[in-house]
Image (cartoon, rainbow, N blue to C red; front, top):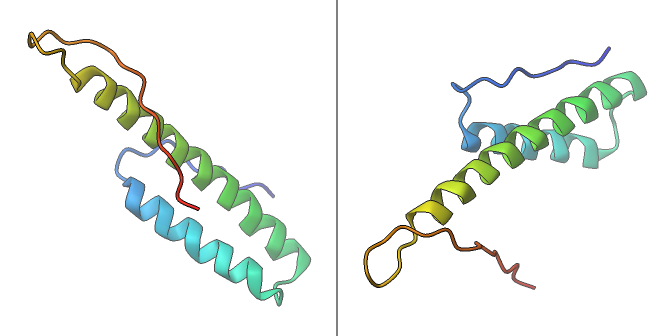
Length: 84
């Protein structure tokens, strides 16, 4: 059965990311039964969506905080460059 995580504002981004990292490590071990693997995968997808939602929200806040030289609020695109 799919275990749907609620949009719980009490779960911080850091908590969700930590849980997601734990699930990934468990799945990478390869010793999980298929049914449990599918349940953990489903939970991981939901945690990933929660993290993405929180990151998108943070991005909008950052965009709104950036100011022009005159002190007027403007929205500027926020881009994250991944390190290779």
